[in-house]
Image 1 (spheres, rainbow, N blue to C red):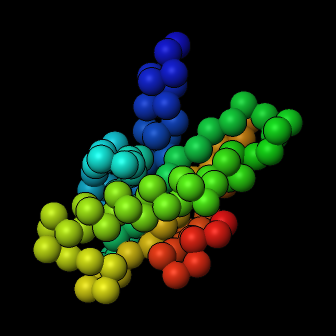
Image 2 (image 1 turned 60 degrees about the vertical axis):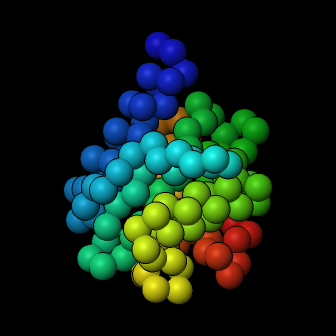
Length: 121
């Protein structure tokens, strides 16, 4: 299985998990210059930008710990551009950044893992 298809399968698993939790799918693999967001969901009136991470084991840290400060900055940038293209911003829209981390067979959903005011996870 290629890295791309493996990533797509974990993103699909994450999407199904979040939909079962009550979120509504909006978009996947949204790319802008400087970043990409794996999933964009809605939780009521809140935009949820989801980073999906997978690690086979926790030998070198779990999947959640791989969401570095630099990655958070790219996600914040991508979300800001995506919102701006819709005439919105962080100031005018309710938003949050979730991480769905899969380490081995353990799935961990971290709602509001970071935000624009405190992007250190």
